[in-house]
Image (tube, protein in one colour):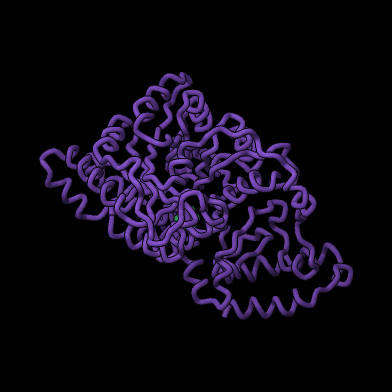
Length: 469
Ligand code: SF4
């Protein structure tokens, strides 16, 4: 019904465009704002962003999302479909996908939405549609894009391994709370011989540590390949684009584009969450800088950054049925490799990979599955209850509970899981995590002995250096 009303208005107002002069002045804007605020507020809980995309979001207003996600759900949706940040609220994107399935034009939810133009807040999207006025698009910049040279590049070991069809192994390094580089380098030295790249978290759990870019640059100087995480939570589009250029200038080319954990879960719950971009618009921004040689504003770069772009996926968090489609949207936005949330449920991963293969996404990006050893049943229960987006089946907790030595059992379970994951078609590698326990990560990788194996692919797959864009 809402879709029909919306389309009716579209025909009535938009297709019969009326010049602003006929409609009148500023008073008309106030009239439209009043009407739109109350009508759409009542029907759709509209927040008046001035860039209405309700018809592409199942009539669910995305501005109600505490992380301002404009392109789909974050990875922290609760098992009951409620919001990671506000447990009392239904996730806006769970509602959006359910709504879009009931709409004739529901596939519009797959369209990549640009970041919000904050100048348009509290203005009338309807009036702008009627008069045909829209924010400026940097057309001239697009024409010039091909002339911008790429910055000098260094070899990227992770990309080479993935394109060679070898099973890749990456590990997470938790940056210390220190200005002394030796701490981070000590941690990296434990991992460097065991992995193809070391992934540096960017304020994980919304806690403050030494920055991801600085540790990544330290690793580059040591000849270690880093993956620099970039979250949208703490920086706006100006700062992020500057950081992307800075990272590339320092020899960092692997970027993992993330939305970021909710600020309330960290050690500065009183801080503001920026969320100017979301993970998909961040990917699209980085891709634009690399491929078109321009900033989001349209201003040209003098040389383009060389980037290998990654994104996160969580097959273990609702809405489960759209997680593969959401990954497809990230790939369309520029993701070349994907890192999943912790996997503790192999059958669930296999179902997800079935959808991925059906959509041929395993041929368009490299999928690395997140794994990690659980030290005890108590920790597993705590993680399941407290860490957004973590799914741990009861059988896993029972096995830990029954074990004489739970730590040893958790390590063994992780090794077994890695070896099983390595057999799943379309998976390009693993990403091993254990908070502040690099020795354990190295031990698990060594014992599993999967690094460098030829990876399993769907019959007829030509992966290697040919990720279809
Ligand atoms: S769960 Fe994530 S995507 Fe959904 S409303 Fe909450 S913050 Fe937004």
